[in-house]
Image (cartoon, rainbow, N blue to C red):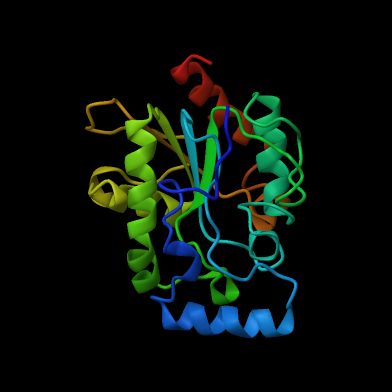
Length: 224
């Protein structure tokens, strides 16, 4: 299965140079000055072009995706995610180190609600709304290519996913482990999980077994 995270339509050709959010653009410019070897630009989706599972995170981490240019790659937040993906056959190895490590995600795709690194890892509502055009485009292709399940990591990813599908949050509240059956012709389901951040995993808000339980449901539903 091909991994084509640098090609349209999965990655909008305008994304790499997007500057629609002045706060984020100015912050990234400062980061590039401080870390000239960092990617420090919008981060594209990564994984299988014909994925059955799309994972939506929050935003690039300073020394993870913002550094490497690939979602959940090179920082703590990716540890549990890639270990779990490998356990369930969605990744060819259990860790994601760099954008050129030849890792592949058969049947899976990873993206973020916000494509640019936000200060203090906290995008503001206007930035989430502006960036949603890219998630909406990704979601459209995901569904057209036979996508079956979306896993939202955290409340922001959950809200951004619903926004991209023009669905109302009040009808589909976020809760860890819940499955939302969305009113779409293809029968798309939305699965919720707490984000696999350092804080959530170290405080045991999200344990490996809790995360595994979410994936057990996903795999059972998409018959992999």
